[in-house]
Length: 549
Image (cartoon, rainbow, N blue to C red; front, side):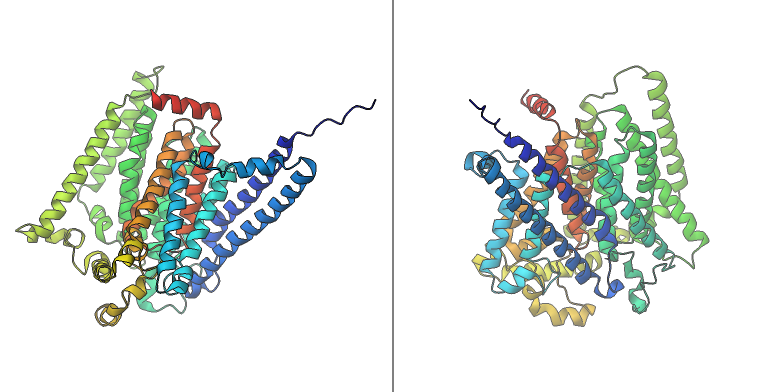
C-alpha cells in the first residue's frame, strides 16, 4: 500500500510571502527616505508638483506590485495549501482581532474615515479629494500617507542601514542648504528666481520652512542614534550628521526650527535621564548645539558680505555676550560628567532612578506654565510694552510669526461663519484657500500674497476637516509616539524615528503640510511602528508584564 504524500506546511508559503513583502517595503522605504528628498524636475519652479507626482506614483506603484504579488500567493495558496493562509489572513479582520491592533492604527483608520466624510460633505468634493486648490494635500494624498504607514508598519523589516541611507541623503540636502547660506548656489537652482525670493528657497526642498521641517527630521533621527549607539564608528557618523543638521537648521532661518529644537532639548531627557550615559550624551548634544552657534557667529563676522546672516532667536543667542563662556562651561560639564562616570562610578550599574526624569518633567511643566503666564501678560496685561524687545514672539496680532497671525485670524473667522455641519466635519481637506476666499483681495492689498494654507497643520485640519478629524490625527501621532516609547528600552534605536516624529509634530504648529517633507515624516513614523513590531515576542511580553506591575 502506497504511503500518503506528506502534507505541505502552509507556514512555508507565509514565510516566503513575508520575505517578498519585506523586500518590496525595503525598496519603497529607500525610495521615500533617500531618493525622494533629492528629486527635482525644473528646479524650484515646479518643485511642489514634481515632488507630489514622484511620491504618489511611488506609492501607487508599490501598492500595485503588492496587489499582484498578493494575487499570485492567493492562487498558490488555493492550489497547494487549500487556502489556509488566505483564511488566516482574512481572519485578522474579524472584530475580535481588530480590537487587538495597536491604538495608533485604530486612530489612523478613524482619521481616514473622518477625512473621507469631510470630503463627501464638502461643497468642493473634487478640490477636497485632489487638493488642487491648495497644496495637493487632499483626501487622495492623505490616503496614500495612511497606506504607506500600514504597509511599512505591518510588512517592513527595518534595518539600521535604511536609516543610514536616509541620513546620507539628509547630509547632502543639508550641505546644499548650508552652501546656499553662503550664497554659493552650487546647484545653480536660483537662476531666474526673483532677487527678493533668493534667500527664501534653498537646497532640494524649496521654501526655507519646508527645508527646516525636513532638516528637523534629519536632526531627530541623528540625535536619536547618537545618544543610543554603542558602536564607536557608527556613533562618530551619527555625531557628524547631528552637527551638520544643527548647522543647517540654524542657517535655515525659519521660525519652525525653534519648536523642533525645543522638542529635542525638552523631551529627549525623558528617555535619556534613565542612565548616566544618557545624561552625558545629552550634555554633549547641548554643548555641541551651542558650539555650532558660536562657529556660525564667527563665520558671520569674518564673512559678513558673503552670508545671509542670522536673525531672530538664533541671532540673539549668537550675539549673547557670554556665549563663549557658556560654550566652555558646557564642555567642562561634559568632561566632569564623563570623568566622574569613568572614575567614581566605574563598575556600578549604569542606571538612574526615576527621580531625575520626574524632576525634569516637573521642570517642563513649570516652564510651560511660565510661558503661558508670560504670553497672557504680554497680550492681556496692563504693560505689554515691557516685552517690546521680544514682542514679535510674544504678542499675538496680524503680523505675528511673519503674518501667521493674520492667516490664523481669517481662517478662524471664516470657520466660524460655516454652518454647523461644516464646523463639525470641516470645509473639505486642503480647501483653506477656498474657505478664506472673501479675504483674498484684502490679503493681496496688505501683504501682496494670499494664503492657501493656514501655516499650522493642526489648525489647518481643524477648519478644513473639523475637530473630530483633528483630534483623531493628534491621537494617532501621540499613540504612535507612545508605542515607540514603550519599546525604546528593549530596542534603543527606536528613539531615532521617535525623535523625528516628535520634531515634526512640534514644528507643525507653525508650518505648512506639504508633500515634500511630510511624506518623509509619515515614512519615518511607519518605520518606528515596524521596528516595534519586530521586537522579539519575549521582549514584548516582558514589557507588558512590567507595565502591569
